[in-house]
Image 1 (cartoon, rainbow, N blue to C red):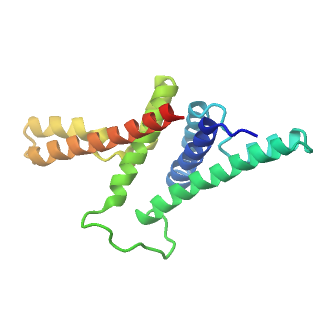
Image 2: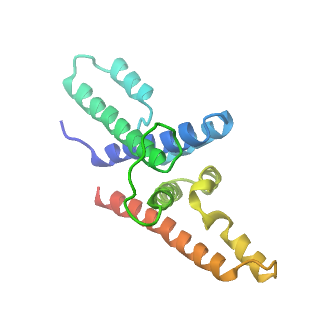
Image 3: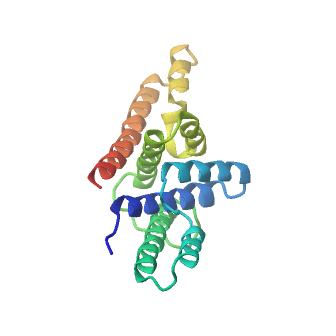
Length: 195
């Protein structure tokens, strides 16, 4: 049995997005969650993303085929890894209350930074694989994770029009947030190219 690295990375990425955005951020908004899941399943074409689809594939295939069990078993493992990465990120960022908190690693709060990198990777992948309307939906769903990447132009224009905001602060945050999200998209592209 030969493992397809692109499929495994799609399983990890898809499960990450589902755990982070669908189950973690918008679990109560059924319509938005459904649209996000549709975008993820389109972007990660060929991946099952949800264990139920993997189990359906196992059970409707040749039950005696060991390669069927091994390849789909690896998909299940990849899905767990993706969900685990999302849960760790959300827990460290304070999104989920588990009673566990890591000690300070650096003087700055790295979890919002990692969240923005992850958002950039997710949006970069969706943007490169899907039509524009799917990217727009993904931007709406990930707006909270993007920092000023979504509203930065609005904030900058508002400062320029004289709302007496701090233009230097708005400009530096807008620039830094954009670079961090861009790094996430670049990482996703490099991983995809390497597979």
